[in-house]
Image 1: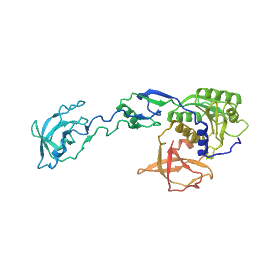
Image 2: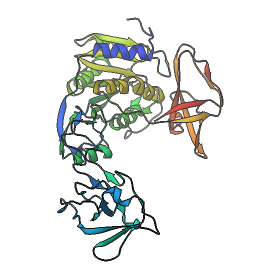
Image 3: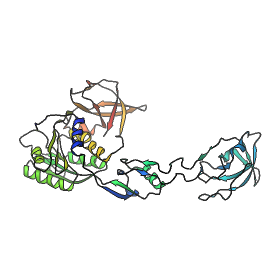
Image 4: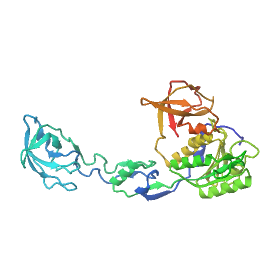
Length: 408
């Protein structure tokens, strides 16, 4: 394949999915207390109605609603109060016309009750005589059996990221264990003679490893795990050995800094040295991030990310996150806000352009200011809260336009 025979992001994602169509992430069953941020591997179907009985949403009296019709503050309806409902228990008595039973919030309604009158709209004349000062309609202040969840209903879909709300739903259904995808495993390799780890002494000409740490945090944020992180010098044998280790331990191997064209670029040769289809993509119609390489080795995905931090992050989100999303069927929406642009944004003709932006909020409205700078500048990251995407056919963004800002 010729270097920098660029393809669009959409085409690159299509190529990747077509070549990894049979690749599947394993499934495991875990306790719901350990499930937050994991991805459901199957639909959760309720085997009960929720609630399982008609219950009151207020403190009041269960009545037959016709007994309240015509009631006013000056001419109340008069009913016989025959008892009360104990929380967590079935009512001992049913009611007929002219009767009422005190029912607390969440209490089970007598079978014949068709509404609950709030206690504020009633008055007990004595132990048995209840005055009602307001009419109510059928079903008022009641949650009926199955109103929340019906038996046989899909309550949580496969691909859902489990959050606190989902855990609450599972608990309400009596589900203590749930099937989730095992966390996809990543192996990160930073390449370059100039790269040192953050604990090493910084000497002239050396650069601290930024990308692997940024990628590590992004990988964990999307519910995956890093099983290895290494720095490798520009040496074919060393790089191949480390990629081989990564392919044994992980689902995806990321190489940071080894995708540019140069005499010391061994990434494509290393990918081609393993069993598989070799290099699939070398060059994206994207700014920043053009010198990206994607391949398959030993049945695993290998992605050579650009060395510049911003480029690396953008390509990770555009290519790697999308791969994970599609393979796991993830249904969550990437965090985003709409913002008014405060300046003109330039674009690169024929390329999908990702512009880092600074956000500010005023009177509930977000405003986006472009952060200009080369993709290797650290401040381009530290001063940005997100990015906007300018499509290939767009000539740029004009001041005052409303655009979606994807949050980092």
